[in-house]
Image 1 (cartoon, rainbow, N blue to C red):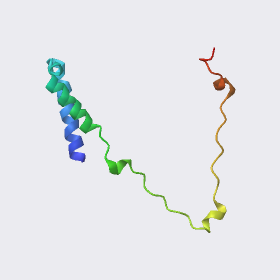
Image 2 (tube, rainbow, N blue to C red):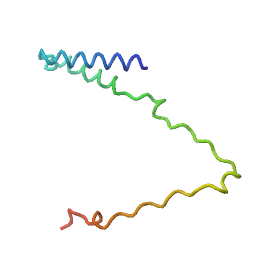
Image 3 (cartoon, one colour):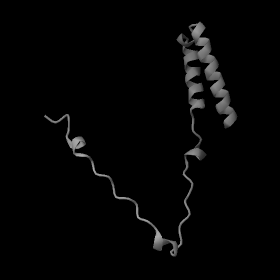
Length: 85
């Protein structure tokens, strides 16, 4: 997948450089090809989007575990609705 990303990035760069000296992107086929290259270059693989599973702690480790911090309160200056009449 890294080779496809690299190739898409290089082709995207070359298309952008070519559009500096020519009316390249006014041709619909070239504009669609540029959009395809951008999609290939900016694509995230499914394996990268998955969060690795965390190891569960044993019951012996739960005794000293810390609780998550309480949620923060909204400051009073941010509680007023600017769109209210």
